[in-house]
Length: 297
Image (cartoon, rainbow, N blue to C red; front, side):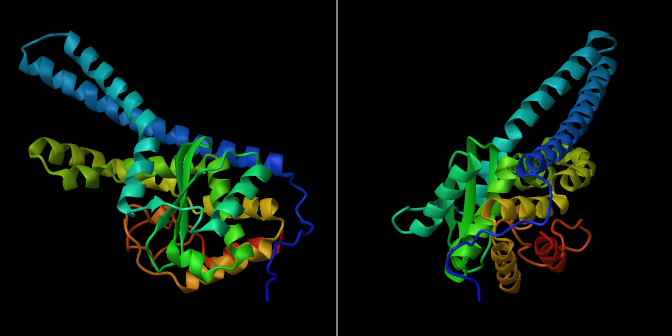
């Protein structure tokens, strides 16, 4: 049985936490830049194509292609700067998250504050989702503008060291900028579906059709299973007690069930809420792989 409080333990790995975080930040930054490059290239080409079509329809007008290219590039800059914040708001809205009350959930707030102090991070906003399923996720633009979302079921089924492990896991996403990447993916990976949901006639339907081939590579960049292993490792260093997170992962996987916002938010959750939808790339590594990696620390 796990102890009621966290117990420090030596870590077998020789990688110092500062180096570990730097590697994870670089990995997430590269994935983010690839997303930006992909979106910019596609929107620039669409703008150029639109400019060429306008030039043909206007019977000339050599300036139109350049104008179209400029509009496409401006749209890409605007979109890539806005999507992390938009993804955060969209995720919170889809799961109907409400701000957690420190007086009603003191254990959650105390753990978050203690871990943030240890990690040198500002305390993120803490949200609660009314769901019996145990799970959590982190979203946000950067460490100063971030949020951790937990379900009511998570607070019910986890003991203190297990909850500490999960909160540390989500803080690891924030510190490594993985939360920014995942938040942006909520919008970029789901943009065609969002356009279809909004309706509005042929223009949005045409845009959704044009952007549909872009969604799978954006999802693969922003929802790589490796990011969960990275966050598990960082969380173990932060808590100094890998068995706490390992035990939490087992409980979360054993009690996994339906959660709101599916399928566009599946990649955010600490464990996959349900089996992957056929034809979609995996977003989470197998439980055994995660537990074995924690056991080796």
